[in-house]
Length: 125
Image 1 (tube, rainbow, N blue to C red):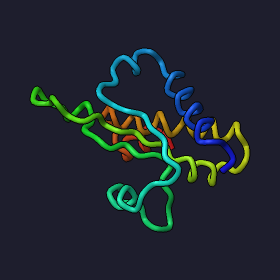
Image 2: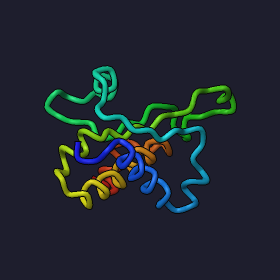
Image 3: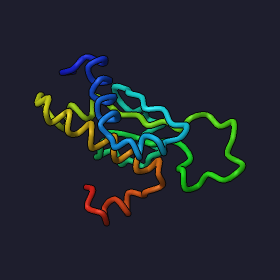
């Protein structure tokens, strides 16, 4: 690992804090966490082929699918994976910072109900 876990977590917090207040105010019942690598179960549930990697993962009920019955629910979880991000970016801390921000935005988009297909249409990849 190039960064300590704490340094990586600080980059994730920095990326989240850099979002416009409008988005931060609209986020509901979601936790932003870090892990070194995705678990086999996370890879399976995300449908990630063995030849691919997973930089981040949103697990939860998007805001667009929540109804009036949504209560007493554990928080959604957005996880950023340090190992895969560092593998993709090499030792360039500026690239790591940029990839972390991109991944945070991507996973928050899922929290707001935006699919990967729609993100592709919007040119977010």
